[in-house]
Length: 168
Ligand SMILES: [Zn+2]
Image (cartoon, rainbow, N blue to C red; front, side):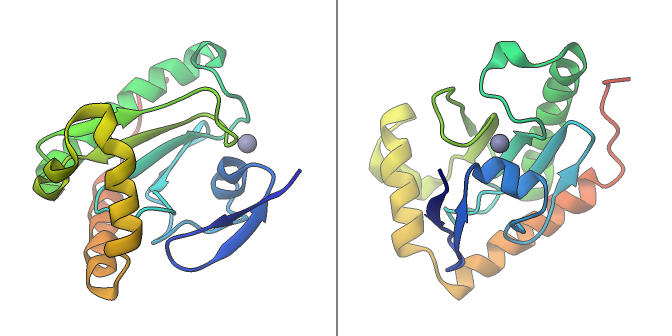
């Protein structure tokens, strides 16, 4: 059954699976595609305006880590490794939180959440994640911050343009 989802940029979309909608291009992601291959689609998170918050979603619709094909497994780690490096060198991101769960209504996707100084007021590790995201959505959804978010997207896209993963 389709669900209504509110995006950070004000759009409300009604989709069965947001990951399918984003990876197929049916719903354009904020700031455009960062990277796309046969197996994966990389984009800025559409709900929480945090610079460098990257989502790595599979193109295929499935939920669990053990459903990755051999080729996808290899490309997955190679792609995450590349993105992480560019978050560091291009965006100055010192630490990243990785979040992924299998009981999602969207399909297989990894959140790469940069850890910034301002997030420390919400504690550390897993318990800080929800308040951090809500703070971003409620307090940082402004033009000035969105400009830095889009800048971050453009930086990463530039660096990933010629990336060829090790999937063979
Ligand atoms: Zn899907």
